[in-house]
Image (cartoon, rainbow, N blue to C red; front, side):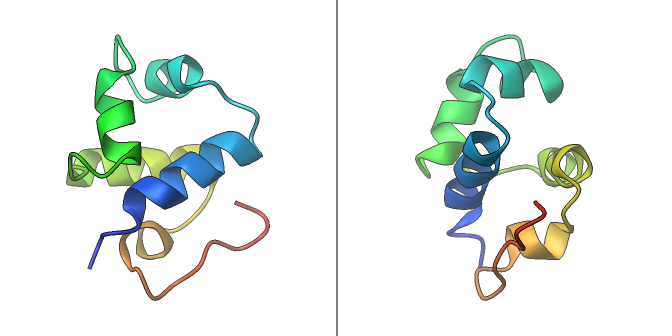
Length: 75
């Protein structure tokens, strides 16, 4: 159900012109390793990360977590 979370996270990061380090900082991580693992689907996001990401990029958690929903152009 959340196979595309990493893809969506990367798309949002790129759309907002953020580096992986800037995203890690904004989400409360000290390094980019966790973010990299999620973007490349080596790790699944926690509920806390999904909520923080949704708030940061002004999208819904449904848009992030449901593979059948796309991100809108505002995200």
